[in-house]
Length: 427
Ligand code: NAD
Image 1 (cartoon, rainbow, N blue to C red):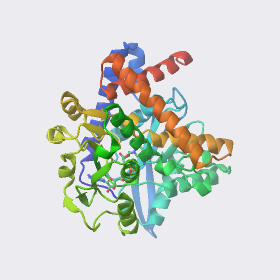
Image 2: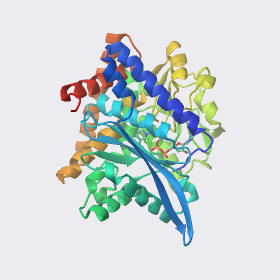
Image 3: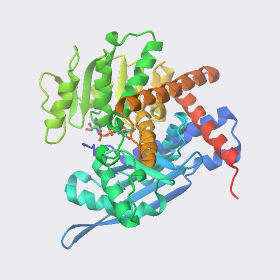
Image 4: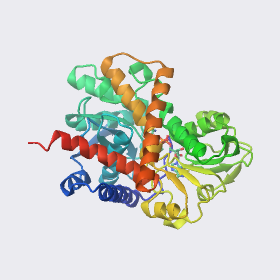
């Protein structure tokens, strides 16, 4: 999977965490939250920083830094992905862990929020080296993960193979077959059917619901999708199947546009066959920049790459009336204000891309039960969870006369605070 090295992540990571905190603060205010509870929710429960030494080859050791942050386990074990990216920092992982708490709460999963990462550019390593890195990092964070403690999953630059290596490490160290320690595993190893497609399908589902409420037919809807990895490509495919016209897509190799719509299955096929898994060289499209894609005259814009791509400096040029956050934190909080003031509807990440964690939850349930569901069962239940969350957020936005983001945070913060309150503060 491709990565963009140009985004200055320390800045993007700090921004992501600070903006998650600002959203919490504003939900706390709307809910008139107890000041002590507010203080508790502002800080992660537990953080672990590990050094990850890897023997790259005989006699040459490199040392990377790994993180695992559990923001809240108030509603259940921590849940959240693991990211391999050179710009991973503690603040980025803290921000993403906090977003996971709200994401699990807004979809009403009995799980808390966590996140992990290693500051590494996996493209500079061989597959075997990445496997060794994954296994050593897993051994480092093993004291705090587990099916009843904290369950990792894939994120940027990690995938089902990474999860399989984690299962192997935990199984070897504990002597117990441990598929329930992660989600996003290969189906052969106890992964859930439909997990890979779940996030994109959920993004498409909420997009179609927003369009329906705006009285717009999919056939009359033009969509631009930034990022053509797991989330972006599946979202584009599902929206195209529903009748929308996908007029622009992009990845780190740039943007590609076609006013009459792009053949998405063909684009996916092209990426699959491309050595670097890129859109580069896909025939019949005009080449545009990623900035031009964000500013296109479309009805729906889906940023599905990395965080912090819509900022105050380019928010003014966004022309879409609906922005659906496929990625985590793609719109900075200042940009959010600019767009909201202009009447743009933003479907926030904690709702829009929650499909992945919903099916991760199903996978955790299946792995612990040792009983696996058929795909139609997974898809049916995913829709129930997404619809229920969407309807509650829309209703809350009406009650509080707020944006969808504020409403999603109000729902989530209220649920987490109530659960902690019912438990009482130990001891
Ligand atoms: P991925 O690695 O599969 O895909 C990322 C895509 O974005 C690639 O096509 C890459 O080339 C492109 N990209 C990177 N930087 C770009 C840039 N500056 N401009 C344009 N394109 C760029 O990752 P993914 O799993 O699809 O995740 C994407 C986002 O969605 C991340 O923010 C991730 O945290 C979030 N997310 C993923 C899941 C999931 O289930 N995979 C769930 C929830 C949220």
